[in-house]
Amino acid sequence: MAYTRRNFLKTVAGGFAAMAAAPWSALGAERKVEWILGGGRFIDPENTSPKGFVFSQMNLHGGAPRLTDTEFMPHGVAIDPRHAQRVLLFEKIGPGCCEINLAAQKVTHTVPPQPGRWFYGHGAFSPDGKLLYSTETINDVQRGVIGVRDGATLDYIGEFPTFGENPHDCHLIDNGKTLVVTNGGGALGTRLAPCVTYVDIGSQRLLEKLELSSERFNTGHLTLSSRGDLVVVSAPRKGLSDKDLGAVSMRSGKAPLRTMTEPADVTARMYGEALSTVIHEATGIAAVTHPGGNMVTFWSMRTEKLIKTLALERARGVTLTLDGAKFIVTYANSTDLVQVSPRTLEILDNTRLTNTFLSGSHIFNWNRLTRAA
Image (tube, rainbow, N blue to C red; front, side, top):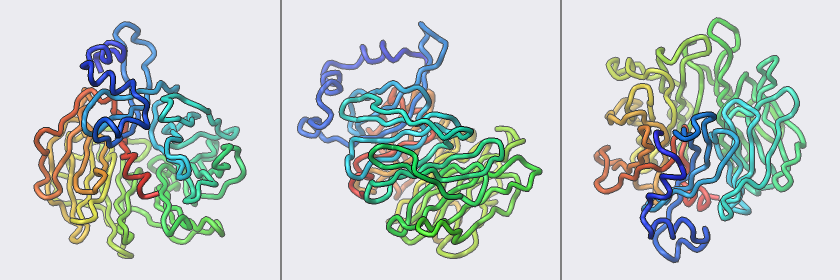
């Protein structure tokens, strides 16, 4: 971004600035609030080195973003189901992990990785909040583990394998009994194949492993429907470049995981990573962002076919509104945010917000996630 955080905040209208300064828990009394969370990175022209990192809280219904400075680029989040204002942030491939208090807008605790390991981007609290799981890699062998920490103290208390290498995304299913993990694998040409694994947490056993049909893609992020339908989005394998193609793979029920190859004119534009994905349950439509292809693709989970593409510059994060009725997408260097109708798959009028600082890979609807918890 070509503006400073400080000068941007000075330009916000007086009413919005007052809203941003109001107590976090009291904002709902002033106006409708739906918090969209995510990481951001910006360059201050007055101090171009180093880049600045923030965690942004943006009200979907307008106002100034509430920004918390961080030491790393926030990627994935885990919300404490017992204390909804307590959020853990994870760095994508690095030592960064910290606890944020949303009400205070500050980092309240930093969490170091175990020696010789890095965090790999995502984590999840157990449904009762007593445990925190995080994807981690033992760096010298690229072996994937799920680190287990005490949910209250964040002390490290154990681990179990991901049954793959360089794990990234993870989602709890079956009331917290099973963890679904994407393992990115190793470089192209190695035997470290990307895969998606289903791991029983109680026994720490591998329940199922899914591999892609092409060796040129990793497994990056995933989303699951309530009935277990799976979407996996991929970047080019290590050893390739962001000029190579990413991919979208889908699985309905217990059918094989199938990578989309048609229509060829669309899959040929999936340069770099297919980044974020979410399923709209009512229509069975999966949305996927493609920043390198400057588009969002929409797929039918029933037919496993493309429905439509939406041109959006550097489309990045995608999630759903609180009521589940609309897609929310972030895009462009100006960190714009819009809502998209699942019926027309077009941007809805008067929903665009700009300068949200939500420039990271993902966005998270705090209201929706805490209601589910």
